[in-house]
Image (cartoon, rainbow, N blue to C red):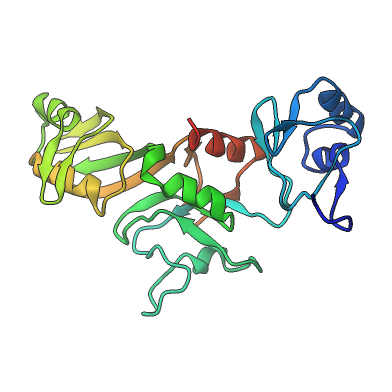
Length: 245
Protein backbone atom coordinates (compact mmCIF):
# COMPACT_ATOMS: atom_id res chain seq x y z
CA UNK A 1 0.00 0.00 0.00
CA UNK A 2 1.28 3.53 -0.74
CA UNK A 3 2.28 5.78 2.12
CA UNK A 4 -0.51 8.05 3.31
CA UNK A 5 1.48 11.23 2.70
CA UNK A 6 2.07 10.40 -0.99
CA UNK A 7 -1.30 8.85 -1.85
CA UNK A 8 -3.89 10.88 -3.74
CA UNK A 9 -7.36 10.14 -5.03
CA UNK A 10 -7.15 8.32 -8.33
CA UNK A 11 -9.42 10.73 -10.21
CA UNK A 12 -7.25 13.67 -9.12
CA UNK A 13 -4.11 11.90 -10.35
CA UNK A 14 -5.72 11.10 -13.70
CA UNK A 15 -6.94 14.66 -14.14
CA UNK A 16 -3.47 16.03 -13.35
CA UNK A 17 -2.04 13.71 -16.02
CA UNK A 18 -4.33 15.28 -18.63
CA UNK A 19 -6.78 12.39 -19.03
CA UNK A 20 -9.77 14.69 -18.55
CA UNK A 21 -11.69 16.64 -15.95
CA UNK A 22 -11.94 15.13 -12.48
CA UNK A 23 -15.60 14.28 -13.11
CA UNK A 24 -14.74 12.63 -16.44
CA UNK A 25 -12.04 10.59 -14.70
CA UNK A 26 -14.53 9.50 -12.04
CA UNK A 27 -16.77 8.28 -14.86
CA UNK A 28 -13.91 6.28 -16.37
CA UNK A 29 -13.28 4.63 -13.00
CA UNK A 30 -17.00 3.93 -12.50
CA UNK A 31 -17.15 2.27 -15.95
CA UNK A 32 -14.24 -0.04 -14.97
CA UNK A 33 -12.00 1.38 -17.69
CA UNK A 34 -9.12 2.12 -15.30
CA UNK A 35 -6.67 -0.37 -13.80
CA UNK A 36 -4.05 0.24 -11.13
CA UNK A 37 -1.16 -2.20 -10.92
CA UNK A 38 -3.13 -4.75 -12.91
CA UNK A 39 -6.38 -4.53 -10.92
CA UNK A 40 -9.61 -2.80 -11.93
CA UNK A 41 -9.87 0.46 -9.99
CA UNK A 42 -12.89 1.62 -8.04
CA UNK A 43 -14.11 5.00 -6.88
CA UNK A 44 -12.39 6.04 -3.69
CA UNK A 45 -9.07 4.39 -4.54
CA UNK A 46 -5.92 6.30 -3.65
CA UNK A 47 -2.60 5.87 -5.44
CA UNK A 48 0.99 7.06 -5.28
CA UNK A 49 1.46 8.81 -8.65
CA UNK A 50 5.21 8.19 -8.54
CA UNK A 51 4.86 4.40 -8.25
CA UNK A 52 1.47 3.21 -9.53
CA UNK A 53 1.07 1.69 -12.98
CA UNK A 54 -2.19 3.17 -14.21
CA UNK A 55 -3.90 2.19 -17.46
CA UNK A 56 -7.00 3.67 -19.09
CA UNK A 57 -8.54 1.40 -21.72
CA UNK A 58 -5.30 -0.56 -21.64
CA UNK A 59 -3.14 2.47 -22.38
CA UNK A 60 -0.43 3.54 -19.94
CA UNK A 61 -0.96 6.93 -18.24
CA UNK A 62 2.18 8.76 -17.08
CA UNK A 63 1.41 10.22 -13.66
CA UNK A 64 4.89 10.83 -12.25
CA UNK A 65 5.61 14.49 -13.01
CA UNK A 66 9.33 13.96 -12.41
CA UNK A 67 9.67 11.70 -15.45
CA UNK A 68 11.07 13.28 -18.63
CA UNK A 69 10.60 11.89 -22.15
CA UNK A 70 12.35 13.65 -25.03
CA UNK A 71 12.85 13.13 -28.76
CA UNK A 72 16.14 14.66 -29.95
CA UNK A 73 17.42 15.10 -33.49
CA UNK A 74 21.07 14.21 -32.90
CA UNK A 75 23.32 16.08 -35.32
CA UNK A 76 26.17 14.43 -37.15
CA UNK A 77 29.45 14.63 -35.25
CA UNK A 78 27.84 14.38 -31.80
CA UNK A 79 28.58 11.36 -29.63
CA UNK A 80 25.76 9.50 -27.88
CA UNK A 81 26.86 10.45 -24.39
CA UNK A 82 25.63 12.78 -21.68
CA UNK A 83 29.02 12.88 -19.96
CA UNK A 84 31.82 12.41 -22.49
CA UNK A 85 35.23 12.11 -20.84
CA UNK A 86 37.06 13.15 -24.02
CA UNK A 87 35.36 16.54 -24.24
CA UNK A 88 33.69 15.85 -27.60
CA UNK A 89 30.35 17.33 -28.70
CA UNK A 90 27.74 15.40 -26.72
CA UNK A 91 24.02 15.15 -26.01
CA UNK A 92 24.29 17.30 -22.88
CA UNK A 93 25.10 20.24 -25.16
CA UNK A 94 21.45 20.11 -26.27
CA UNK A 95 19.53 18.84 -23.20
CA UNK A 96 21.79 19.96 -20.36
CA UNK A 97 19.20 22.36 -18.94
CA UNK A 98 17.25 19.62 -17.15
CA UNK A 99 17.95 19.23 -13.42
CA UNK A 100 17.38 15.46 -13.44
CA UNK A 101 19.78 12.74 -14.53
CA UNK A 102 18.87 11.71 -18.07
CA UNK A 103 20.06 8.84 -20.24
CA UNK A 104 19.72 7.99 -23.91
CA UNK A 105 17.76 4.99 -25.14
CA UNK A 106 20.10 3.05 -27.40
CA UNK A 107 22.83 4.75 -29.38
CA UNK A 108 23.67 6.45 -32.67
CA UNK A 109 27.31 6.54 -33.70
CA UNK A 110 28.94 9.94 -34.06
CA UNK A 111 28.74 9.89 -37.88
CA UNK A 112 25.01 9.09 -37.83
CA UNK A 113 22.17 11.49 -37.11
CA UNK A 114 18.49 11.56 -36.37
CA UNK A 115 16.07 10.40 -33.71
CA UNK A 116 17.36 9.58 -30.25
CA UNK A 117 15.05 9.11 -27.28
CA UNK A 118 16.18 10.57 -23.96
CA UNK A 119 14.54 9.92 -20.60
CA UNK A 120 15.02 9.30 -16.90
CA UNK A 121 12.54 6.39 -16.93
CA UNK A 122 14.66 3.31 -16.34
CA UNK A 123 11.74 0.91 -16.76
CA UNK A 124 10.91 2.16 -20.26
CA UNK A 125 14.59 2.25 -21.26
CA UNK A 126 15.05 -1.38 -20.24
CA UNK A 127 11.98 -2.42 -22.22
CA UNK A 128 12.98 -0.53 -25.37
CA UNK A 129 16.55 -1.82 -25.38
CA UNK A 130 15.83 -5.45 -24.47
CA UNK A 131 16.17 -7.72 -27.54
CA UNK A 132 13.05 -9.74 -26.68
CA UNK A 133 10.72 -6.83 -27.51
CA UNK A 134 12.16 -6.33 -31.02
CA UNK A 135 11.46 -2.58 -31.24
CA UNK A 136 11.81 -1.54 -34.87
CA UNK A 137 14.03 1.35 -35.94
CA UNK A 138 13.70 3.07 -39.31
CA UNK A 139 16.68 4.59 -41.14
CA UNK A 140 17.15 6.69 -44.26
CA UNK A 141 20.53 5.95 -45.81
CA UNK A 142 22.40 7.55 -48.68
CA UNK A 143 24.54 4.95 -50.44
CA UNK A 144 27.00 4.86 -53.33
CA UNK A 145 27.77 2.49 -56.22
CA UNK A 146 24.32 2.99 -57.74
CA UNK A 147 22.08 2.39 -59.45
CA UNK A 148 20.84 -0.34 -57.10
CA UNK A 149 19.81 -3.64 -58.65
CA UNK A 150 16.57 -5.23 -57.46
CA UNK A 151 18.56 -8.04 -55.89
CA UNK A 152 19.84 -5.71 -53.14
CA UNK A 153 16.46 -5.53 -51.42
CA UNK A 154 15.96 -9.28 -51.69
CA UNK A 155 19.40 -9.91 -50.20
CA UNK A 156 18.77 -7.65 -47.21
CA UNK A 157 15.32 -9.08 -46.55
CA UNK A 158 16.54 -12.67 -46.73
CA UNK A 159 19.64 -11.91 -44.66
CA UNK A 160 23.33 -11.19 -45.13
CA UNK A 161 26.24 -12.77 -43.32
CA UNK A 162 28.31 -10.44 -41.14
CA UNK A 163 31.42 -11.14 -39.08
CA UNK A 164 29.30 -11.44 -35.92
CA UNK A 165 26.48 -13.49 -37.47
CA UNK A 166 23.61 -13.10 -39.93
CA UNK A 167 21.45 -9.97 -40.08
CA UNK A 168 18.32 -9.17 -42.07
CA UNK A 169 16.07 -6.20 -42.63
CA UNK A 170 12.38 -6.16 -41.68
CA UNK A 171 11.65 -3.98 -44.71
CA UNK A 172 13.57 -2.18 -47.44
CA UNK A 173 12.68 0.26 -50.21
CA UNK A 174 14.36 2.56 -52.67
CA UNK A 175 13.40 6.18 -51.92
CA UNK A 176 15.32 8.01 -54.65
CA UNK A 177 18.33 7.85 -56.94
CA UNK A 178 20.64 10.33 -58.67
CA UNK A 179 23.55 9.09 -60.73
CA UNK A 180 25.63 6.70 -58.67
CA UNK A 181 24.02 7.61 -55.34
CA UNK A 182 20.72 6.39 -53.97
CA UNK A 183 18.53 6.96 -50.92
CA UNK A 184 17.02 3.89 -49.29
CA UNK A 185 14.81 3.26 -46.28
CA UNK A 186 15.66 0.25 -44.14
CA UNK A 187 13.80 -1.00 -41.08
CA UNK A 188 15.23 -3.49 -38.59
CA UNK A 189 14.72 -4.43 -34.97
CA UNK A 190 18.20 -5.33 -33.81
CA UNK A 191 20.82 -2.93 -32.55
CA UNK A 192 24.26 -4.36 -33.11
CA UNK A 193 27.00 -1.77 -33.55
CA UNK A 194 27.01 -0.11 -37.00
CA UNK A 195 24.51 -2.75 -38.14
CA UNK A 196 22.92 -0.69 -40.96
CA UNK A 197 26.26 0.46 -42.35
CA UNK A 198 27.66 -3.07 -42.25
CA UNK A 199 24.63 -4.61 -43.92
CA UNK A 200 24.63 -2.15 -46.80
CA UNK A 201 28.37 -2.46 -47.26
CA UNK A 202 27.96 -6.25 -47.34
CA UNK A 203 25.73 -5.91 -50.41
CA UNK A 204 28.17 -3.54 -52.13
CA UNK A 205 26.66 -0.15 -51.32
CA UNK A 206 28.55 1.72 -48.56
CA UNK A 207 26.68 4.42 -46.63
CA UNK A 208 27.69 8.07 -46.95
CA UNK A 209 24.91 9.46 -44.73
CA UNK A 210 22.63 7.74 -42.21
CA UNK A 211 19.58 9.24 -40.49
CA UNK A 212 17.34 7.42 -38.02
CA UNK A 213 13.81 8.59 -38.71
CA UNK A 214 11.78 6.49 -36.25
CA UNK A 215 12.02 4.38 -33.11
CA UNK A 216 8.95 2.18 -32.82
CA UNK A 217 5.90 4.49 -33.05
CA UNK A 218 7.91 7.71 -32.50
CA UNK A 219 8.92 9.61 -35.64
CA UNK A 220 11.60 12.26 -36.13
CA UNK A 221 9.25 14.53 -38.04
CA UNK A 222 10.47 18.06 -38.74
CA UNK A 223 12.73 18.46 -35.70
CA UNK A 224 15.73 20.59 -36.64
CA UNK A 225 19.22 19.13 -35.99
CA UNK A 226 20.02 19.68 -32.32
CA UNK A 227 16.38 20.35 -31.49
CA UNK A 228 14.26 18.34 -29.09
CA UNK A 229 10.63 18.05 -28.06
CA UNK A 230 8.75 16.47 -25.17
CA UNK A 231 6.87 13.31 -26.06
CA UNK A 232 3.12 13.46 -25.56
CA UNK A 233 1.35 11.17 -23.10
CA UNK A 234 -0.04 9.25 -26.07
CA UNK A 235 3.46 8.75 -27.52
CA UNK A 236 4.82 7.50 -24.20
CA UNK A 237 1.87 5.13 -23.88
CA UNK A 238 2.52 3.88 -27.42
CA UNK A 239 6.16 3.14 -26.53
CA UNK A 240 5.10 1.09 -23.52
CA UNK A 241 2.60 -0.78 -25.68
CA UNK A 242 5.23 -1.47 -28.35
CA UNK A 243 7.49 -2.92 -25.67
CA UNK A 244 4.77 -5.26 -24.46
CA UNK A 245 3.37 -6.63 -27.73
